[in-house]
Image (tube, rainbow, N blue to C red; front, side, top):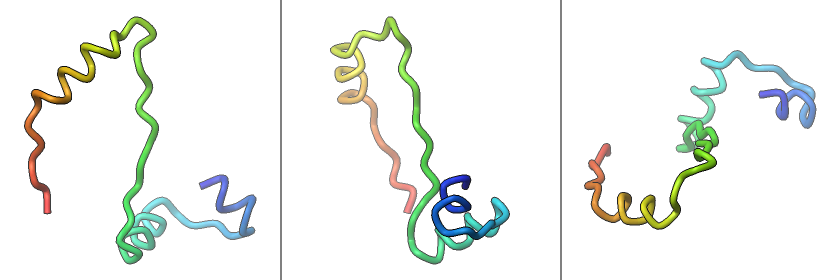
Amino acid sequence: MHYVKEEYDVEYSKSHAYTLLNEAELSWRIARPRHHEADPEEEVEFKETVEKSDRS
């Protein structure tokens, strides 16, 4: 939200920002850090075997 303040000189509460994103059919995303010892090949294999749920 700091980006919005700096770029557009406006401030929103977190709940209002969620509302605006929802109205624009967007979602709040955050970066997911990776462990420094994580094996990329095992990660790919895991992602291929996990079933994704349909949340719509």
